[in-house]
Image (tube, rainbow, N blue to C red; front, side, top):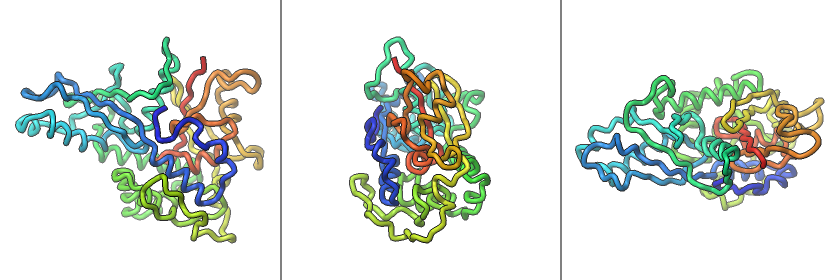
Length: 342
């Protein structure tokens, strides 16, 4: 798994970390995660006089970003390196769309990190599986988007609407209503998307902290300001923390953790995932997967699969409430990708 988070990077010890500083630290690690992409332009669709020996574009893309948000940088590369002046004039970004190596259109409304993890688990069921980090190879088409498969034109605006819809759905699953999302001012809703577009951790969490549960009973208004580097540890005390704050915003107080399970070349499963069992025992990812996929994750005996969350092989004792507060995507969802063990 290619990411700034290596497999098992500190995840096991995270269960004992419940201060605002540690919450912010893991959120930042998730935010700063990247994956390698190799984007090849379909040479048949390049205008005449294009430099066809330079149609590949390599990028280390943010996990929380989306393919349509990469288009401006890709276009700049094409204009600067591949296309002549006349060719650049006839390009229409609204006709661009991405395809996987196997010829299937990519789900542009999925976070890039999820696309990569889904690609990783798909490799586990191939005749010669590999777990070595490799770029996710994509094909960029410059014309004739298949409307019947893409549903919507993969534009930044359509991506924003899809993202906001996911946030509202996650809000409803957590709290039983979308009141927290709908009570945000329009400037705040726009700001949360701008944080994604500009990859600005502080701008995003300034708003997201109002709808996302915390790992402790207290809530601060936003993560501590930072210099933008994941190597700078946050302060050990959150200045907004007070001992008398209510518990209603805690990760264990949600009705259900927004979780989706992705199987190799299979369906996407969505099950209710309460943070506590019997109202008191922490619900772990091991118990959740055993109840949802008992053939792959039997209660007794050898496990036939493993779970990846944000590019990290997740330890079985990871609590769903903690994953929902610290390892969810920017859209609020914990995406569990299931790889097959051989």
